[in-house]
Image (spheres, rainbow, N blue to C red):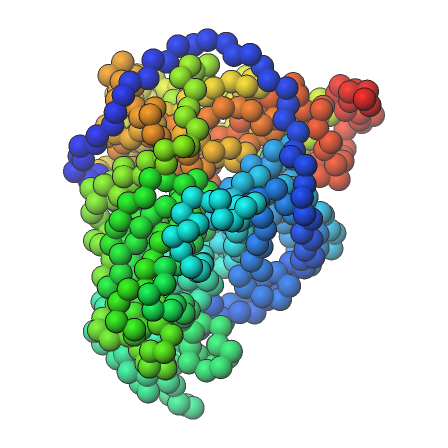
Amino acid sequence: MGNPCGPLAAQVLICCALMLVVSHQVAPAPSPPAPVTRRSFTWDVEYIMWAPDCQQSVMIGINGKFPGPTITANAGDLIRVEVTNSLHTEGLVIHWHGIKQIGTPWADGTASISQCPINSGENFTYEFVADKPGTFFYHGHFGMQRAAGLYGSLIVNGMDRQKEPFAGEYNGELSMLLSDWYHENVYAQSAGLDGKDKHWQWVGEPQTILINGRGQFGCSLGITRDRRACDRRKKDALCQEGDKSERCELIRRSECGPFCEGSQCSPVVFDVEPGKTYRLRIASTTSLSALNVQIQGHKLTVVEADGNFVEPFVVDDIDIYSGESYSVLLKADQRPSSYWISVGVRGRRPKTQPALAILKYTNSKPDSWPAGMPPETPAWDNVTRSKEFTYRIKAREKTARPPTTVDRRLTMLNTQNMFKGHIKWAINHVTLSLPATPYLGAYFYGIEAIAFDSSTESPDTYDRTYDIQKPPDGQAPAAKVPTTVSDRVFKIAHGAVVDVVLQNANALEAGVSESHPWHLHGHDFWVLGYGDGVYEHGRDSKALNTESPPLRNTVVLFPHGWTVLRYVADNPGVWAFHCHIEPHLHLGMGVIFAEGMEKLRELNVPREAITCGEAKTATLPLAPAMAPPPPP
Ligand code: C2O
Ligand code: CU
């Protein structure tokens, strides 16, 4: 369940950052920008029988379908989604990944953090402004509901399309939402992860990678690079009545396999016109897998990362971690025909076949498979190559630069630990557990003291005697810090400039350190730099990139390495910052920023969002802790 440390890669980072601790002028709480258009949706979330990879499973669907409907909006639009929970046995929430929720932190859709789960049979209305253009998605954020299929695309166009950078360079858009799929249901997955001692069970590798919710388990498409035994001729992939082969047994329970009309698992076909250029939007909401995308015979020009334009660069393939999104420009400049799109696993030894889709030029032979084998994605353990791709991402010229003075620096050591017979992930030796009362409600009603451990803050650094190259039990006695489980937070003052140093370390197994894609809610951050080994401020801060750091909402932390990011705490709310790998978050790999809570009373928090846990049962009469400001 890990990947060994890769060779060191030299990185070129420019300029130096002088980080002085200066206090900042506190700006007033932001108010949401005036809405232009309202876009309303009514969603019914329910269990559905679906065959995303030709094998039928129970999934969480929206309005009877998987994946959920794509939301398309313009920047500045007010998005309103009325969600009814028709799951009979569990609550739910929906998070709008990449949307900042400026002025609406209660609509962030994080259970125990920004709201109470919507109870079975009840409904809740999310209302928020699409604050900026970009390629985003939404997903469940309670338990492991994302891994159960509760997700979909969210695409925000510029208010004035033509004024967007690169707008003149493409003729059309294509969109690809990537995910991974397990045959074991999420209840079994989470029960395994919660197990003690020998009952602890890792989720393992996913069975299938999905492209827009479609994949083909094993050989069911009959085409793979790795399994020569799979015959790729169409007739061999069809199953006759009574065929007892393993592959046909698998397809049996799906309606009809990948090749019939209306199949839920037929490969996605992207139609393009010869000579035209397309903006291909790619987002990843995988539970576990880091992926690599490539298109047979075509180059890709990266132009957007997480809703921010980047300095364009040309590649053969892209790496994408869970929580990330990209736009690439794709020119249909090859001989009019069909071409394979391969999506393979990176960073972990794959046990999952690459996912396949088809790029089809109009007027090319109908229904023919692309010629040749699908392109082979790079070796899973070539970390140097992953670093090279990631380090190339630079902000586009006109992107806002980060402030140069920093108010607070947090260093977060990422470790895998044992805690009372359970395997956990911890940040500075603390593993996150979420309280019954959403933090936002606790602050709103002034009941922090009974709602969670508000006696102290989370530790903001770790003891440097800890050796990141060694497993926790290989540490020197002085560095053996016991792991604790806690729901403490970081309290961040409104307007503060915060630097976070993510420091990776060795996992429980010697010689193993994993990549973790860290995602921040409520903000974009600047990625100031990456490095191998231990981050040493005196030495490494000089090489950070403050001239052209890309703005993002998700960033990878490489094995045995560090990543530094900076954000401005200008958006009052309680925000999660966590590894986007679903089972890692489940095992405690995250922290909570309670940001600008002194401004919370200025926000209009709907009571139904936060009335659960102590906020429901407290004997004291509940009222907002501070009176709201008088009407103007
Ligand atoms: Cu897409 Cu908290 O995550
Ligand atoms: Cu992780």
